[in-house]
Length: 113
Image 1: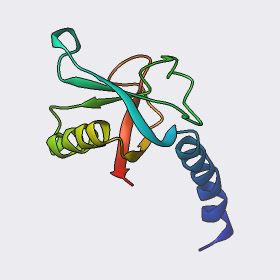
Image 2: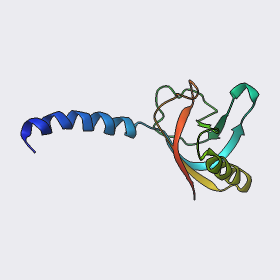
Image 3: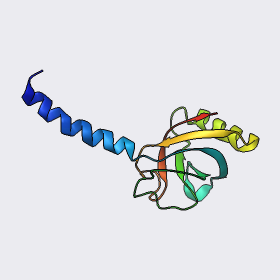
């Protein structure tokens, strides 16, 4: 790879790496879940101890939001219900965006501890 190509790739790597680093993440118990007709297919998740939230995620209660109508979202909803009902710890990382709701971060992935 020549030096010119490399010099073009480095800024891109920094931009994309920085945006992922700013995404919110948390390992904690699910405090609350919220859904309702006025929120369409969105499921809101409240968790404490979130770090690195994006600037758009200003909601103090509803940390993350999930589109429950998305393909395979039923698995995520079931995992969140299990975590909430059993008090198990869950890890959630966000996309660093608030596209589903203007002040709650979109979920990238989650797992149960």
